[in-house]
Length: 224
Image 1 (spheres, one colour):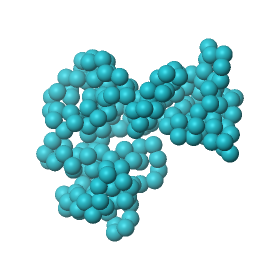
Image 2 (cartoon, rainbow, N blue to C red):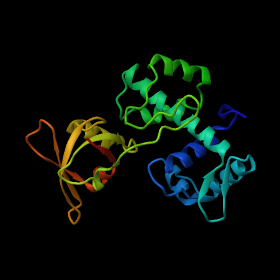
Image 3 (cartoon, rainbow, N blue to C red):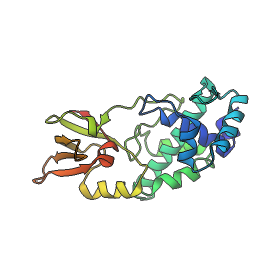
Image 4 (tube, helix red, strand yellow):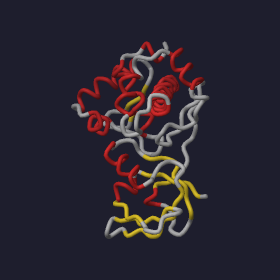
């Protein structure tokens, strides 16, 4: 069975299960999946049962969902499709980084393995998508992500943005206005937890920037 033999909902489920643990150690649950997808938990439970019968996931009642080796292979292939398509849409078709997520969500179910290979070659084998998420290798092996959330970065140490969550297009547009993107260098001035504010300084800027907690949680950085 190849990933293209699976239904679109099955592909979505596998991708979501894998992506949930890429930047977090906490496995996803049926309830969390239902909330993200905007459907009833019973709908997700039915889908997970079908995946379990196919040998793609394991799921203890009321517990977390785990991918089998076969399920992980398919999930990583879907992640690779999605991120290559996002990169193609930005670099070749001129989309903004805030526009590509939904487009890629549709296209990833329709493209063939040949098209993905041609896109990869055209883009000269990129390793990150426009938001900084690592693109898995052609063999289905994930490239381990790096970084910590900006909200947890130590003050007064130069860091570089490595990834920005693409969950909220409005926030991406806000970050673009501020000049925040992957590879941007900055320094955390201070965390003010009781005010839910992280103050940062960008290289070459005279004025510091205050970010709310949701914004600081959406950015990952690595030390310089």
